[in-house]
Length: 206
Image 1 (tube, rainbow, N blue to C red):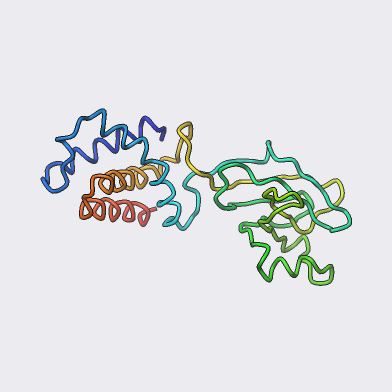
Image 2: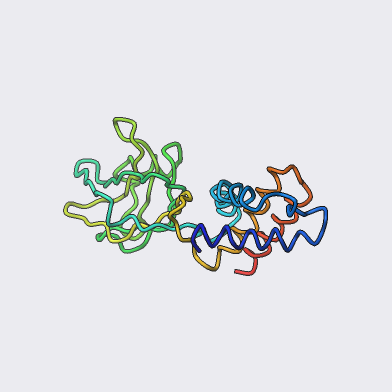
């Protein structure tokens, strides 16, 4: 669903809710409400991402844009973290026998194990670490990384931008959550909660 489609559907939701005077935004100018909707979508997507179990609200394929660097001495590979990165969905190197579906942090026990060549994970149980390079740049550290390795897969959950096209099966939840954010702006707490409950109900049906 495009941004224009999200705006249109959210307007429909708000108009339908207008049958209840406590939820009504019909007294507001439609163009003004549409502007509030556009500005609320990114926050709505973040809220849905925090509630969604499958973490595929706004997935992006970053494999073609990523540059893989191999550290032969350290036995790992790295790629830069893309702008808008929220969480890892799946990543795999050619040498791995499995897909890694989560990224640990540099303060985790998982990272300490990767720093030791005797406790480091092998190709059957690869590990991804979210951390920082020597110059403070955000990176994903991939263990193990072999010479001449290649990045076969890299899918991640991203922040929302106006050019994104959200999956149809998640978009209705985003529309209800956008309505919730708009009602919050208009300080209608009960309406905001009602719309959020509808969003959660949409997610539970997936």
